[in-house]
Length: 175
Length: 421
Image (cartoon, rainbow over all chains, first blue to last red; front, side):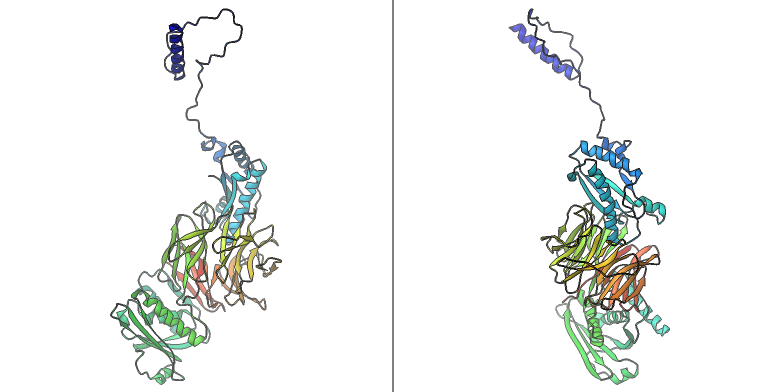
């Protein structure tokens, strides 16, 4: 009885210590084998190690990952997602369907030309195009909100086509 | 005539510069036809008050473009006996006189009289006790009285305006100022844009759109208490708030259905209902003067045009037919004139249309975001110049132009406040 108790104690201590990755115990408890029983013994996982990837973060936060790209660009007077925007839509849709607790604000923008309120509505059309594309790829309504900043927050402050092209844009913003 | 105008300009800018915290400078160009010659005397003892009453009156009357202001070159008290015939011979049809005295309780007694030099009779008078702070306002009220007695139209000199000022990439202010640009006060200040401010008809509140929640949301702020409520934060955009003439409702542009449409809501945000039903963009609603219709911008026929429909719903009728891009409808207080912005020949211009005849007239070039004065005689708008945006004013007949310029910062989105008691 005393033997069993101490064996059990040592076994459990050994299991705990090996799980903490501390130096292995020298002593190995001797277990008396039952001579007859043919039932398969339960798997002994006491020496298994479960690996941890240190520094593994949400793919969303990987600056080199595809999800770092969150902008979809549009042609002048256009509200259709171009071919070059489709990978952005697809990558974020894939992430959001896997992580359906996450929500995004899709912020549409226009270039500086035109009226304030009308441009707010045009920017919203761009956001809505992205939203619809993501919805079609399976992202639920509750995770998506299409809004607009109109021409109020230009990323590029120039007054030429290069600046205007940069500002005709919808951004995916995680909440 | 030109020499006269120069001396008027000089005296106007000099006056603006001498006032404390003057933020805007008024430059006047163009004059009205058939100006009424009015002589304005200095008020007796007016230097006891912090604001020079006669100077403010003179500046207001000059800025209106309606008067040829003659300096009486002397102080004349309201209690003095005046040789009105002499003033008539000097070319004045009317004479403004007055006095200021300091009262025992620290307030100022301001008295004024308006004389008709032709009929040699007194037309009007006012006498009020005002705080030091309100002597400026009292001067504007006297100017309003002169304007109303001589033109038959209520004056706007004692009204206020609100506008958005951007002083840096992340510095936005909602500013309230007197109609002449003096007395700037900050109503709201933050890092995110503010657009589309709109005065309530009783002048106590301003509705506006703020991007502080990373999307456009409509707030109504009580100017006196600073308290504000969110009137609309539906999914998507919430923008373009416009008050009904009785102040009980707001028309809004919301994108909660997927595309931007016009909705109507009670002033406290309750009772929201959809008004327009198109598959395109319907935005920038404005109530008609009788509150029974709503004008709005719609691109249902391709490019943006202005339409009108009943507040009860139903068919929308198109109002603008010239040009491919017509936005920002504004209705005059008497309901007879529509002002809006039209893109013609590559630029944006301010147009006005007589709604009865449909006749349109271009009032100003390089204009956006117009706002009628409450007497319907002037339109304030935003304009670009020297790399910045600033405010300008044009009379509804297009003859009188004023530019309000600042030292720095971009000013836009003006909204002209209502008449106050």
